[in-house]
Amino acid sequence: MIVTLEDLAVAIATRVNIDIESAMKDANFVMDLFGFEDRIIDNILEPEDRQLFYILEEEGMLITEREETTIYDGRSWRTHYWYLNKDMILRYREEKREKKKEKKEEKDVTSVYEEIPDELWFSREL
Image (cartoon, rainbow, N blue to C red; front, side):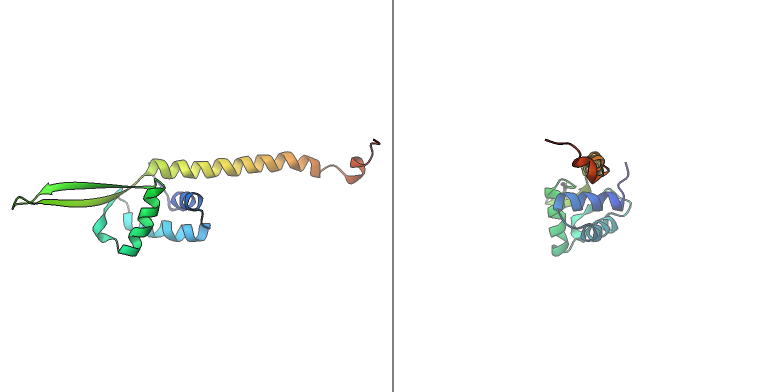
């Protein structure tokens, strides 16, 4: 399953309620970090970058996970990862497409009335 830059931008714009240009910047940043991988290590994030990741996690577009390993001296070492939740991102994109389609259909129905000349609206007597 492939998530494109546009898919993520539309999902961000829809769920976080920001304009598409800002969403595209955020999506570009996220996709640059992930590259062709599904997960990244948390250590590469700056604190201000992590805020965006927390927002996207809250909306279900990112998932966190951690691995715990015992190192040679017996202590535990935790590694935190971020994963793209591709299913959710694609679902949000589809929701946006469906809303656009519904709006278009709604507009198409009301356009019937716009096609009726004004004279016909007043041709009936009450």
